[in-house]
Amino acid sequence: MYLFTVPNMTCGGCAKSVARALQSVDAGAKIETDPPKREVRVQTSVSEADLRAILFEAGYPVEDETDAA
Image (cartoon, rainbow, N blue to C red):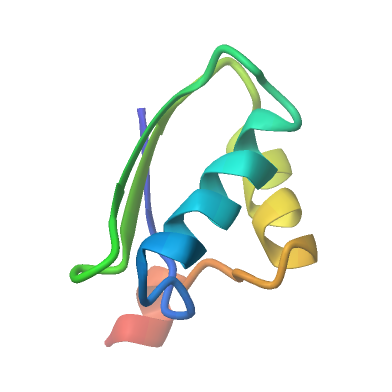
């Protein structure tokens, strides 16, 4: 399972957009979003790099751990 921090995911509408973007590469992915924490948990067989790329293309870039420090 991957855990991403997505700073631009600020509301339920954003969370739906994030989930749709991720499901575009794996319709069976298990996705949990938490807009107040700006977190997304994804259980999928798709690589982390591919997930990050999809989120970036959708306008929801993932914060790197070094960005948070």
